Image (tube, rainbow over all chains, first blue to last red):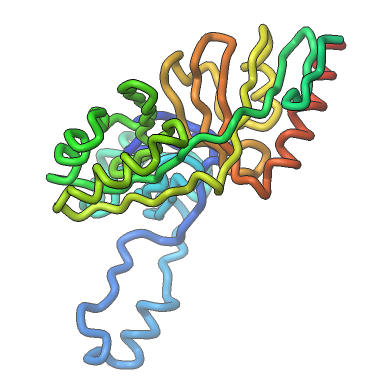
Length: 100
Length: 177
């Protein structure tokens, strides 16, 4: 079982309290009617699908109820960090340390 | 076997599960300026830390999230709470959820161990006098810890038969060990 740190509760809790919510930092276009079909397709469907550190959203659904962002290594399943929704992407080289 | 009153769900030397009398329950949401105004109106400080509880008289307020609180009060106090919050001008949401949930008391020397049957988090990580919303075998529940060996569990009523059945099984199993 994964242990996830909720930045809102400031507790590290079992994965079963959380729900996965897809890739993070996918911004909805401010004016949807102005974007092309290709751009809209990219917003809706195209994801990075990285092998390695992945920016993703989680929700502490059986707890504070908040959405937050996490960086998880998709190879090792290790959580590098979690941070509040709306905060900028953390710097990967700092997070990865010697592994970068 | 202890005397089984109609409100006792299960009782063993490990733990006792009892159905509690109905109380008035409110879900309160608000942020920013509303928090201080609501605290003043209710006469209870709305604490900001998730899991913290504050009491004033018979009103018991648990912080569930950064802008969310659960209020328990005697049923006769419900109208007063609604009126108090109605006078707050700042945007907020007070929703009566009295009939949504049922409460059970879980007491006894192995009360915390009984909860581990369904709770992935360690019940002992909830300090005495605090509370948390968490999950019990798939059902979202609110745990209030009133003492080292005394918990209260709020569960949505449609999940109650499943949850109480599991707790009753656990009471029997722990007493065997």
